[in-house]
Length: 288
Image (cartoon, rainbow, N blue to C red):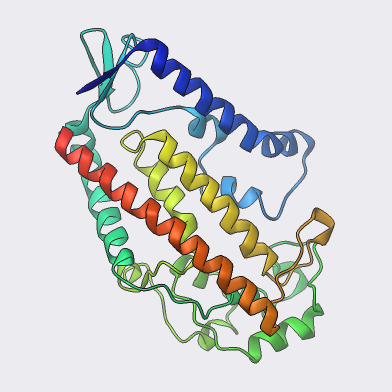
């Protein structure tokens, strides 16, 4: 087991906490002021990993922290000995083995498939298709093309959403228009790396597997999710120019090309993180 000297790991932990503080400052300020943000709030509310949790630094498996005993003696899934603290990989797998197996299978299956790039972010449009004003997910923000124009975009395109956690928010009128019928049980069979939600979910899998996943990897997954979410909402039917988000007009040929180019770049980033997450799970097995 690698042993990190106290000065080294405390510096890394402090740098990590500072990075999280910068990334979460707007969120914390909005909560105090009672303001909402249709783009950034999603990462904190849908995934429900608080800034304080994200700021807590973990080295991952096979690394002992000198001088961390007894400071981390009460941290979940940590063991102590010889003045060090480290991940108790065996106990982690005993309690979280089912989650580890699910995530491993899901990531491996996703990596085995080519990305699909023909959805054009229409899942957000399907979530407001023929919906009433009180049913809009982001009330207070206008639809860029108006209600009739938004519905017309959905009706003139083929919906091909493969991700259950996006599909389940389709309006009842939009769901039958989708060429696939995603379910939770079929998630591993349908997940593909071109999907924006599958890329954002890498953040979810990283923090759900804490402290077995190194925190620097979790933070990079968060940064990817943040970038993906911005594209997600720029391509959505809402007009968010007041917040500085220029629309990706997926109803046009040029907008579709812009969306697909960004989608391909995110696929490359997300696949690299998938491989790192699988390596981290392998490391837990080796350390158990």
